Image 1 (tube, one colour):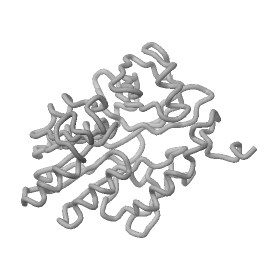
Image 2 (cartoon, rainbow, N blue to C red):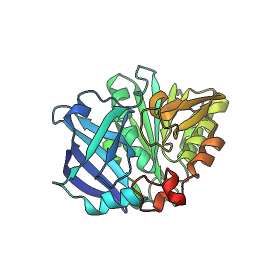
Image 3 (cartoon, rainbow, N blue to C red):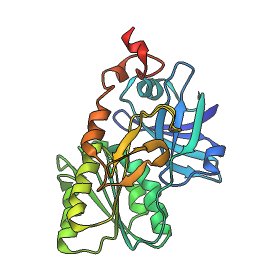
Image 4 (cartoon, one colour):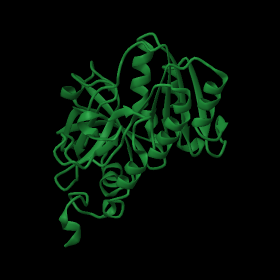
Amino acid sequence: MAKILRKAELAPAVFEFVVAAPLVTHRCQPGQFVIIRVDETSERIPLTIGDFDREAGTITLIVQAVGNTTKHFCQDFQAGDEILDVAGPLGRPSEMKKFGTVVCVGGGIGVAPVYPIARAYKALGNKVISIIGARSKNILIWVDKMRAVSDELIIATDDGTEGHKGFVTDPLKEMLTRGDKVDYVIAIGPVIMMKNVAATTKPFHTKTAVSLNTIMVDGTGMCGGCRVTVGGENYFACVDGPEFDGHQVDFVNLMERQKMYKNQEALPYSCGGHCKCVEE
């Protein structure tokens, strides 16, 4: 059991949970994730560790109420309640070294998992330029936190209500076209955003990593649900990732797989629709 210490609504249907998980914080690194079951009727859902405090023994999870389980979690669980189980840290940590100039791109709730990565790169002596985006100002999250760990923060919104009007790829392409020094790019967010970031950097041969939010069940590589094609070979995002070379990811295949259980994910089955029960 893991106790929820704090809960806050950051944007419509987007919630921040600070959870007591000392065994996770003891070992977790930027880029890793956990899989939780909120109660005995819940499916297992993967959530990236948005922040962690080793001294306090806490992790911070950002949850968007989209499917049956996330809606149940966001609506029905409050500070003081307990999550049934938290498994992790899972996945491989982000590649950590002094690259030089690192551009961290976060879209939507992808801003949260990019935060500890940007913080760690800054601590290693990199120049960190962060580009964060959302459809509109009212759903931007963690702006102040990202500014605090960045040498430069660029904001983009689709409707222009905050910062640049357009997509996160726009300022990134401007930098590269100008010939600005960019040694490494990491992008986390919707699949289409990561696809476009990789397409933007590829002509400039800029090393680019993306964190793939694939369908996941067990998080240990046994179920095969998180299979991705990278460089023509199959990998499991839960154990081989979640970060991969963005220029090698087969995004077309990934997006097709992401749609496979779209209808079932809204059904109130404890398995989350990933088994034969949806046919019965």
